[in-house]
View 1 (cartoon, rainbow, N blue to C red):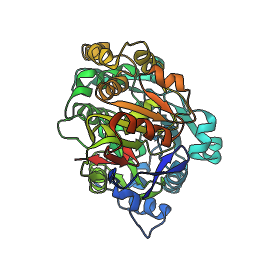
View 2 (spheres, one colour):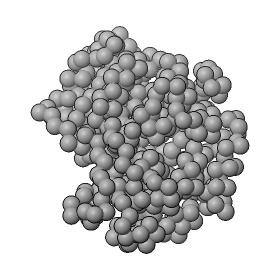
View 3 (cartoon, rainbow, N blue to C red):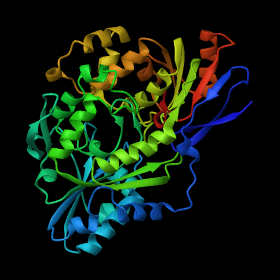
Length: 424
């Protein structure tokens, strides 16, 4: 009987499944990818070999000011490694340039000072000008165009008024944008609330092209590319990480071309053949992505792709920060059933998209078909129950319950890190 490591918060849990029940363990090859280079060497090599773009040193020469977009507290971008190298490289080429670091909060809450220190390190927080993007503060935004979908494009004023705009981030499979990274630093990263809502409308979320690993004909991706172009995003540094959040590759250069190359690398590691299960076990890859129920929906979509009819999903996620979105929680909690949520949301036109609608739409889609047992000892059980899911303190408790529903001979598929795989 194999012991399978599942990320949980800042550690791992080891779980066991009987051999006669276990159908398969589906993992990204990124978790076992080996490189002889240090993380710092990988970043420096990427910066020295930009894709489809002049070097960052060339771009900053003669500039008086610039903005570096970085990810917020919900993303495992290893900024303690990437940002110091990026800042040093820039300042060696242009010692006097004024640099602002803009946190791409998207539609999330602002990143706290404590979270900034945890993510960037105390030296950067103390010595650099770090600013939270505020998607609902109209004074901080500028209207810069109309999205291909028809929604208004509002972006952060600091980013639009700077001489040079670049971004750092990471690339992983994304449950409706296809992949993270690249253009996502702009939309939703530094976009106005009304723009995020338009881009995440119910029709787009329901599209068969708005799925993990899909960029072709993806309407959400199309809007994001347009936003990055209008923002004049001049350069990106995007990393790929393994299960321990260590950098295994990096791509720098043109915001679209470097991102495309990075996505193909991720696809080559993340593609996994589906194995359908009566019970599907997954996680959100541990901290920081498993810190709330909102984010945990991502991992659930991986399990959804491997579910037999009427399957049970066991979702292992700490959710120590609670639900992660008031609108997300209220729309689930106030509904009689997930079906009611789904039927209601599919009737909402683009211009009436509600905050967090995309997340409760996808959660309702999953819950309308499958039972979900959330495994956490760090979240209010009643909150989880109010959102039409079950809660268990331990994995063993959840598995006993799942077998009681599906039978002792139920076939079990395990996806240790649901946000790292593309299931085909």
